[in-house]
Amino acid sequence: MSDHAAPLPEYIAGVRPPSAAWMGMDVIEYWPDEMRVRVSFAPNKDMCNFGGTVQGGFLAAMMDDAMGSLAFHALGAKVAPMSIDLQTHFMAAVPLKRIEVEAKIIRAGKAVVFAEARLYREDGELSAQATTSMKLRPFVGLQFDPSQNADTPIGKAEQKASK
Image (cartoon, rainbow, N blue to C red; front, side, top):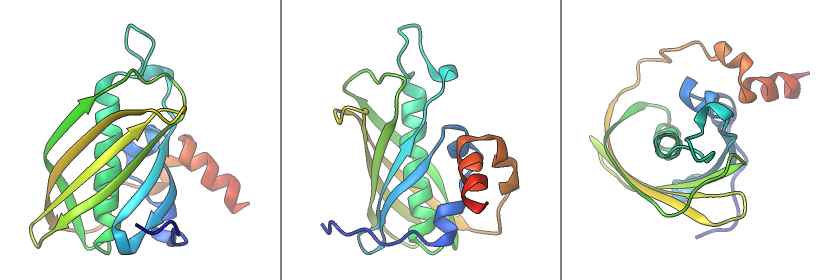
């Protein structure tokens, strides 16, 4: 594996599905030759369970969005990946602090992509991991308005950066 990430292409740095934007997803590093990405998430208080930690379904969604976004961008934004299955293992509770996910495409075929993700707490502890298979559908354009992300952490950061 290379330790040198590529500069983020414009389409990766600026386009997030609404779910990823709501969870505060931000791309940290992208290795296109390895089909690998590291992203962070900023969980909000609405994601907490009774124990005050991030509820597992949101952690699974974070890994799913990281792998799906990676597949979309790594395959040239020509296909729209759709999760067929998602197998998740939780290993530690995750406090309401910054989360990092590293996702990697394991194999990409013409119709299906296989990927894996690892989720780390702010202190670096591996807290969850997931594998997925995604069906590839033709990409027919964004099915949402990216400007609607304006009130999310991603949208606010993008507005600040463009000033």
